[in-house]
Image (cartoon, rainbow, N blue to C red; front, side, top):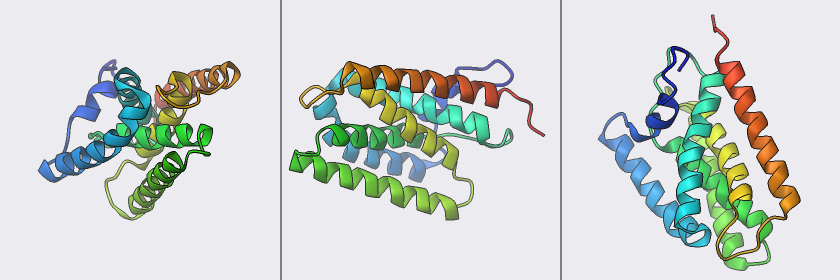
Length: 176
């Protein structure tokens, strides 16, 4: 990316390091997708999924090692966790949504704790995907539940712009 190959922020989420990595990501995408996609709708789901992957890779660019190899859909998967939390905060009176949010939160928490003890895992990418997915879900809204007010959507948009600018500026500083 620092060499001008910006597309890597997007394409890294489609690359995987081994079959186990690919299969484990596919299983989680299937699990989360069967709950998040019907709530958000197809296009909003795709929007949040793809841009969360980029958002996760931006935080990895900012705070990760320049020598690290980042690959996999986990940045986008964490975006789905963040999206589910955003949907849930607005719809906590719905017991089904409340249950799904707890499940998404627990899965994200377990993964982050495992990240702390596993070598070669991009925890920055995971946290960045979580942040981006949360903000993007507020902005995009959902198909069937209560949406955030315009005020909260504007705040989330401004937060996302600040996040992107901050991570790009931080990531483009030469690291020693």
